[in-house]
Length: 331
Image (cartoon, rainbow, N blue to C red; front, side, top):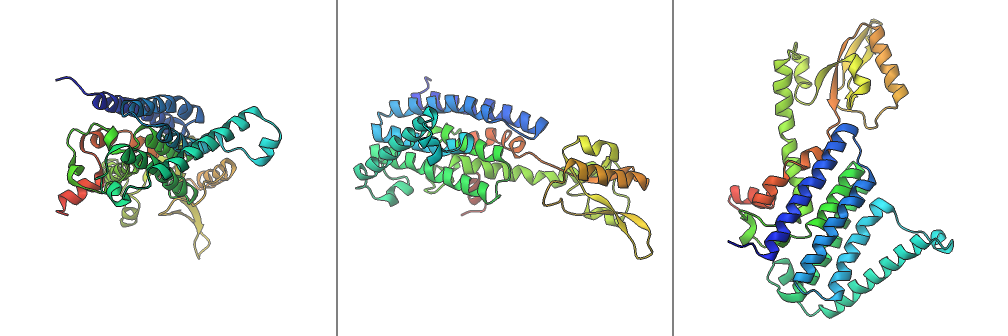
């Protein structure tokens, strides 16, 4: 059976998502950072595919410029935004970027006026059709980018690479109609999370496996040697002290002075709010070493992108995780 244009574009999007996110996840795993150049490279096929989709659906110029506004908003996280001082200095790039913002804004405003006669409730419930539905679904991308940006600024999304990855997903897969779901649990559901937010929820679900994995690992390695270790074995593990400074971990073991004046190792149950400097960490390690502590409890710095990458496949197969959960519990 021949694939439709929408299916070809959809599966191409899934392929780009796997490649781009896979590469980012590898860098996040090895270096705990993903360069801005990575997103500048991979946003190009995302924009190209979005343009092809809008062309296939015969979108007018206001919809193209509204999509441009979504991309412009997301670009601030990577290239920043021009200031008044930048514009007054006459920097050509800053002037061009500002002009990009302006014409995109014009497209959004004109589109609002052009398609204002539609009932927004119909758009939310998925009952709207035609160009009006396409315009408002495209405009919703601004809301998704805002939610991700807001979460990043509130540190609900901790890493800059995590926020940029989700913004990239929002551009690559702006709505569920652009993704070829094999089994769509949400076909009869009016309200679904946007794909980028749903991918974050899928990743959060995979995080729930971490305590189980750590418990099995710690029991198998004989790290649970006392009752007090039970408070550690589900969220941390034991590592040789010499490996701490070269590993992506938080050190949980420190020396504490007892009432008798004796120094004993103490294991914190939570990672520090702020990552200590290299000098501070070296000082802590030296103190432990001087007290003949050779193995310590540590908590892994888990990179979110490593968890987002493998859940792309189930999301492509089944769609929004929240819809699946509601379906399972009978709501």
